[in-house]
Image 1 (tube, rainbow, N blue to C red):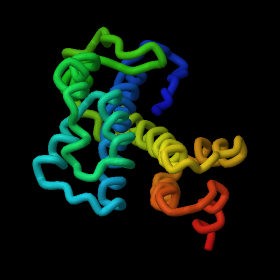
Image 2 (cartoon, rainbow, N blue to C red):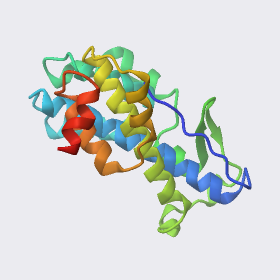
Image 3 (spheres, rainbow, N blue to C red):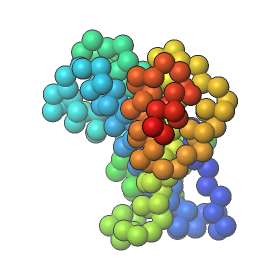
Amino acid sequence: MGGIIGSYFPGRGTMSEENFLRGVAVGRIDERGSAVLRVLKWRGIPTEDDTRERIRACTSLRVLDSFLEKAFTATEAAELFTEADGNDAERDEPDRGALLAGYYLDQDGYHPLRSGLDFDPGSLAEGPYLRGIQAGRVEERAVNILCTLEARGIPTLARARERITACTDLDVLHDWFALALVVSDAEALFAAASD
């Protein structure tokens, strides 16, 4: 379901790039978990605190993908958590602590950063890390819109797909995600949002 943000910093392999990529990974994970919870809420499926915490604590994009797909058909939140999504699946990807401790994500998966043990996210309040989180959230929210339309059986023409993936405004993407849950065709996202 998810796309990958590529990084083309002028100094590939720099601390700035590494911190940006850490932020992207964290942003994508947070956004995917939020999408699962929004779909459950939209469908009127109650989620207890422990369910919300389990979704929020999950750091595997693959497992969160599974949760999001199941959120469209589940009759109760417990159906999201099957044995196939248990500990073995979560070991495929580093947890959030591992991401912060020194991994980055690209099209080939997670890779260790050379300077991971020296990372302090609190020291990057205005830097590449927060820009990475924003970029990860933007990309993931666009992906979640497309996945929502697909899960609902709504075809997405290339023009609509390009408009969704080109948008970098989280507020607009937030509105489009909410609309993707109810519109009858993808173009209606843009008409409804501009009203």
